Image 1: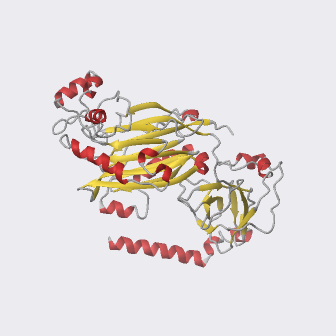
Image 2: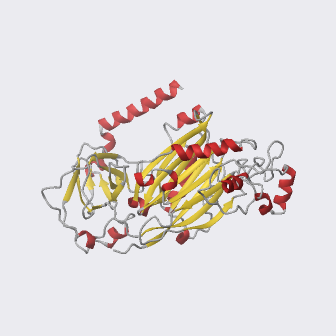
Image 3: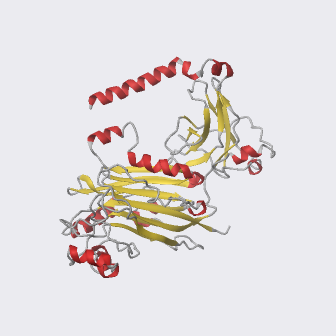
Length: 484
């Protein structure tokens, strides 16, 4: 079979937020300011922050609720049908990965890693965090870093880079290191400065937009040329003003103690000939800063890319039959089958998610997936099932006509009536025990309360065990807050 490729669009953002919560509208920074051209919005977002507040009270609050930054990003992105796939935090460094809902069943091998470089590798105020994954058969690694600060710490920045590169390892032997992935993006507050110029000279050249002259003295470009750090990566020359150091709340530089510099950068690399008979490619679409944001002494920097991936990768997949409405206080069943040549693994599980889920980590409940097929066979749906049902599917797992081609074996999973659920719309996820890969997602279905329970005021909330569970959770939260 001939391998064919297709484009995926990746949007990256890096921003040092100096410990402050989001106070500005983030739509412009995400490329989603009105009017939005839906046909050109990204498939993936990689969002990197540095100096996120890590005060004890903030870290304690995040044990109960999500941090304000991920909430702000999700509030915007979920409107455009994005879901959060993964996040990692190391003290003030946070990295978030979002994707369009249609892609969640084609992501494999999600893994995170981190490296501390502060205080000789003992403290996480500096260092790097990463998320790696496979998308449609191609490997991608995102690295968010915050390197050593100040003009004089050039050698320490070089050492920080090499330490992150050496220490971060991944499980897949084909992509064990950061730079052995098909596509790698390294972005963050790299903290490289401008040599030889005075602060006043830099400001004067910025006003003249003489960026090329300034870049001749840019420390990052020097170390790349000398092969000391980042020589494995490429960067388009930044044709925007240095992103640091601004007066907070204003649009002018604070040159009282620091010289302006391009501290916030996006670098990239890829391996075009990673596979036989195909050639991968990477195209940068933009590389900009966003001057309108004034809540930090750094400006956010964004870049977007088109990367080639396989249009029909050979992946293990699970296909659910359309699920009939489930009812409260009744055993509820679902049928599914595997793609050709695939079979279940021990400790695979099936999670119940809200139909409008905005994170793949938000399962309501789960049960272990059976490892043996059912002795019976499901009744396959007719090709004429309602058009409304077809249009309701947000993740295309398998059409009815193609489902009828599957001869099994068929697996049956049952959620017992003891499972306590709030009536509403749900989906089932089949999740592999390896990396928690999502192999299949069902179409939405209704979980319906019994009529007599509705008449008595909701039924489910008359359930004493549920009330007891809620009381226990509230009591635990109160104890946690009292300990603070």
